Length: 203
Image 1 (cartoon, rainbow, N blue to C red):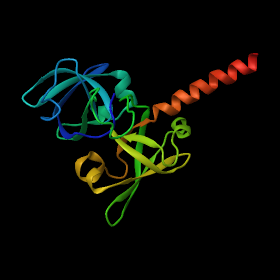
Image 2: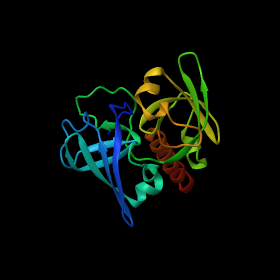
Image 3: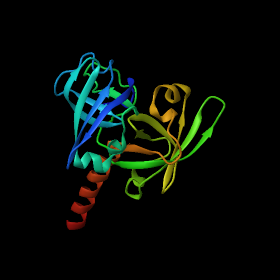
């Protein structure tokens, strides 16, 4: 489990594509400082398993399903990526419950600079719209953010200077894709309510 608090801005070293998967190698000295084979590291919000590591770099295998649901397949050597290690049981909960299971991708629609922050609008796939609410939580490229406005086809977030400086969201341009993970609690509530209504309808 993750919290959406980016620990390090890493760099893609290599992306080796196969027919139904890819091997991604990333430089991230901080997140590899205590890495072990099989450890979980979120890369732009996608939970991946460390296969090899050493000299400040680590490699992960990315399956076809992950490539289809996320923007990882579009990465190129030199690209920056948001990195977060799985949270330890004794860790501080700084963001919100993030699984690292990307629900889909959006696209940066607009950026509106403010005096100390920036408002970013992101497109929202129709199937994810019911789970995104004003002042609720959403994960964008692995960053835990609070929704400012929520519409049927887009939402906005406000990025503080720290987020702009220390994550990839500071340099995302209009038209760039981003990984989205909605609040898992909303999905659990929906499932529970659907089961209850189904039981009531048959009783």
